[in-house]
Length: 525
Image 1 (cartoon, helix red, strand yellow):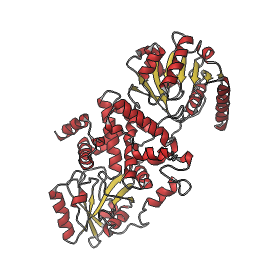
Image 2 (cartoon, helix red, strand yellow):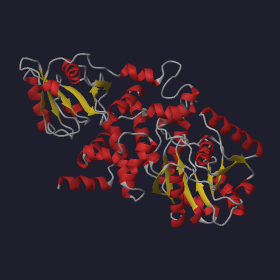
Image 3 (cartoon, helix red, strand yellow):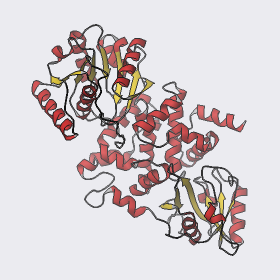
Image 4 (spheres, rainbow, N blue to C red):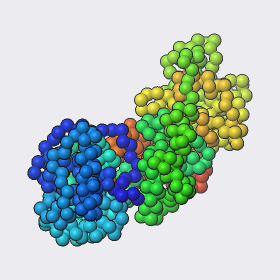
């Protein structure tokens, strides 16, 4: 992993930059002056602390201090109290030290031993690690009770979330100090247990994995990102985000997750390894999932999204199927409901669970009777059951309230674009992206796998549902957290969807968390 870096995180959300003096008189030391360390130093300075910064040598410290000054000036700010100092001098009378050096356990161990030798007995020691064990760092320091994780997000000057990580040896007093300190910095603390990748990076891991697998399985990267943005409301698609932060960073973190968990669900995607080996590590290299010399992500997304006709055609929309009156998308909209009896009609057969033979027979009967019929589902079993003349979509209501559709078009599977689908989308005013006939399609596959990981995190006691949702909305700027999504879909629906994908793919990645199964059973009862 690159020095002082984090797993991918959205960078749109900014906190206020007004002056504060919450930490007047506090002596804070920041060690490691990569992008994260420089940002953390500025955050402490904004809050009124006396800040000392340290890097690997006097020259590197001076260079880092100069960059801090330049970055503050570029943001229209001036530093209050940030000075460079040798490590022993910096920590001698410090209140808190935050290490943000390279993500290498041996480097951190050596640093922590030096801090222990020169720091006072009441020093709070915080690590900005995004992937290493806080418990191991506590042992390296020699007094685990005073060591805590403070995982800031990039850029630290703008992102509000800080994961406050408690190892088994972290003392209650140190945890309370760390939480109060985070709040005094103007940040929002979310406490979690020491676990590989903590909260945000761990729960987003399936998002990145599934996005890469979809690209491997023939979905254009721009289509993956367009669905994530259009259907789920993500401010940046997962493949664009991986390119932005660097595939080498993601790959290193993935290898750490696999090593720590020992579960094949966490194995890195071969496509990422292949791109990294070829030097195609993302935007900084000019090429990753996108070739930036040919087409930038924004243009690619605009190209793959079908926009509805400016004027909605008159259309009578009839809704049938086991989920005709349920789900997050209400049909028909008022405009379609007002269509006259002479208007053409489309029947939408809504079946969000695995279809049965009875479902297939009902769709065949509608299609063979000469009617226009469109199945609304993401379940991959429709690939074997869909009649020739029936369309296949999956409709979503975005967090902003817009309708967005995945349209299944698959030349290999003999699924062609059909007029009833275009007519339906224009009548609904829905934007759409064409996707192949893969289990879960794109949006539900991404969302359900993230929900499953979030449930596993809560099941093992790493965090709580409320804190998980807070972490994902602040750390990734997702409009809804995974447990809010779970509430919209229902545990039984998500559990059934994961089982369906697991059966069709034969991959343990889609193994439902036992707690999710229990939640689904509780819903059914």
